[in-house]
Image (cartoon, rainbow, N blue to C red; front, side):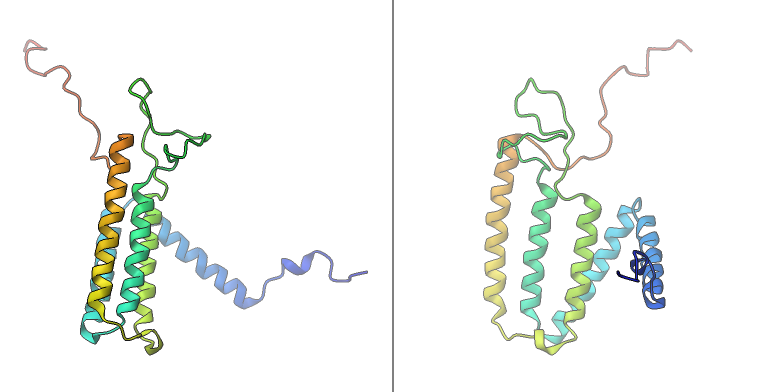
Length: 191
């Protein structure tokens, strides 16, 4: 018989305990940033600017920048796409987009929520920044071709995404609470 029993998996080494504690602290601060979307995005823009300045000043790592651009484009498509694609015709348990005028209003639910979009984007910039410190990733390429190819890819992908939005009549953005033109405040009360 095995003497170790079922307890061997629950005993953690001190290194594992410290790593778990560090992860809990990291997750705590990450959770605290959730309601502060503007500050999160400003921080991401600062990280992106630092990365761009590094690539510009060292005049290299263009293949990393291209890979980062493709990854960010993939994230953007997930952010702009509905959770349930009406084109697939699949039935889901959750809400879906209305496909006919008589359908009731259903809120737009993203395939990639804003927080995960921000978090993935920030991690991608940080990883790309760290990769610029290792010369093995500095593959010599003619960067204008990569830039042109990425722009063509971006335009074609966005054209397809916008056509999808128009076809199924959804807008992936909301700009605050909707205001209705109800009763006016003047004339309703006699002062």
